[in-house]
Image 1: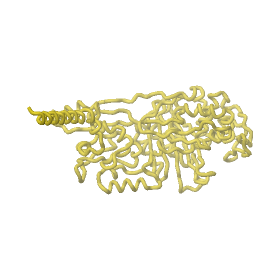
Image 2: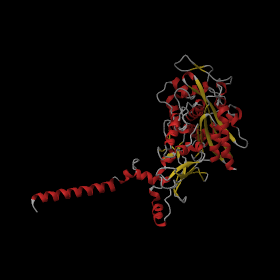
Image 3: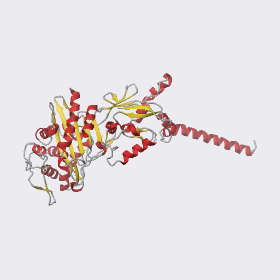
Image 4: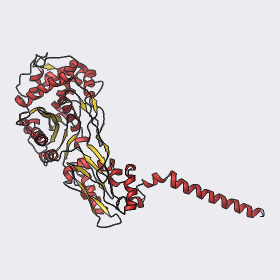
Length: 486
């Protein structure tokens, strides 16, 4: 072989070697990345070539699949009572991807999860169509309907938790949207989504998890917990050192109370019963920022929660002076909380001081409902001792039996609660938010803790109160859970 032919042979050999390296690189090194590339049309076609697994509540699917009307995607997602369940399911769209549970558990629902390998392999031999697995939630359908119906046309949110396990029983947000209207691959689906996104009422925002509100007087249960845990007061019926008027530290401004209530040197029970700003503001200043921060963080403040959908971190600030700490201790200044966070606070109190980690998915299963993964309840923290939790329960039960929370009373159950009317806007220039947090218990224990927040722009300002707007919603949610126990 002459020299030029040898060079050609060597060059061709190098080309073959490069081709082999490239093929193996794509097939083995880049295969997983390419299979998940959203621009890979074949992957997308395969993704929608079979029915998607379902999200299930109370043993019934709240999702489904139907044949697409156009394009090369065979099936698209459908939703039953879509607006009511959107804060739980999220959406999956042939054009715009997916979010929330639909996104987090996408591998299970599409059937591509490694744990479903046996089912996929078996279907090759049996000729059965490929199927996705299912997501079984912890949600209580009746409680969710009560929450959604109670909120009605108003902006707001509800979160309900089983205090003993941390299981989320209801997660409602209004106004909402219908995920079925964005599930396809048409221009109309895109227009529907753009309309939702541009709506100033933010229907696609999950207010129960992603909106942080000033908690107002509902935060006073945390301040009371801090007072008990740090030994500032021990007996909830002893008088506190709370003069009236009480001037904010380093300020010329007096803290004021709403209404003509017996707040001067009021006991913790009476102060919570009538929501005395002066008592709880002074407690915050007396304890100082460090102790208040410690207690708030034990309840979950300043930490994101994953249920598994991400919830924004609620806020209790560090490095505040005494006046700022006093205002924060009555839920003002820059203190902010999600409805989920305040449901967690209430659940910990109802569960004798033990805070369980919130979760929304009970089980992941294969197409035949055989369990692949099950969530076990997990303790998150102990914000207060059982003794102090029971004292705080007594205080919250007085609020409902003889105080501002009477609208939450339930026949045959003991209810504890706290109202809140949170300032909104600069110098409270906008209509305030109405809050109510509560739990219900029977001789079987406490199966539900609820947090409700209502943003009612249409109500008269003087009619906005936690006891008036939010407490009836909480009552209906608790009643729905209690009815299942019967």
